[in-house]
Image (cartoon, rainbow, N blue to C red):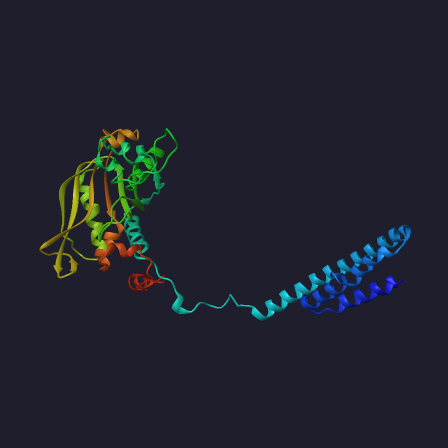
Length: 351
């Protein structure tokens, strides 16, 4: 009968000398495979007497397990060694500075929101934000929209699938709900702007289903239309960086303001170029008005004691006018060439 101790020693020596996973696999096949040394030993048990077969079988199984455990341990060592060798060979120094060509650009929307916020911050305005998924009350009812107002219809508003039997949520159509939530959460006076994304069913060169808006809002005692006009005129001069901007207020209608007005600024058109300032043409830039008493009542504010004004403007539209961007849809096409042309450097100035 073969000396089992010698077989174990030979197998363990072969395992220890294997210097790669491939070499170790050859040892495993030679020792434990279908035609391996220990497999043949187990097959030879059939020639032994029953009592001897039982004893020798137990010895063979212990020996086979000892070799198998040695192979597993050696495989773990070799695997770690191969990983470390790859790490030494394939390392990358992530501390190297980036190449200048890969520097990112600030999107015109982000740039203009920052410019607007900075101007109004100098006037004492804070910044308020609210949820983009709204309910009917905050988006319409609290803002004095009648139940039959066209804006509530599916063709103008994105309604979402709500719970069965419950009111459907919607994507806010303006940032005006932020006014309601801010007033309900605090006490007057208020002076803030509300920048954010808004959503409407519309798409062409001057409209997109999602766009950015900034609303301004002031509630205080003895506020009148003169305050509104002065605030907007100062903002327009600062934003367009001109000393004088002809401004006119055209009567209009919004459910949440009374009186309401559209704001036009003077300009000169030459082909596709528009120059802001004194000129023969006018260009609409925003809507505004005095806050409707019903809106104040819906926020538990006494309209006999407190008055205010509100205004709203499209961020992309202002960016198009100031920086000569011809098509609104290009803001959202994720074209890196467009961003390199119209974007801004994080360090200031154009990208």
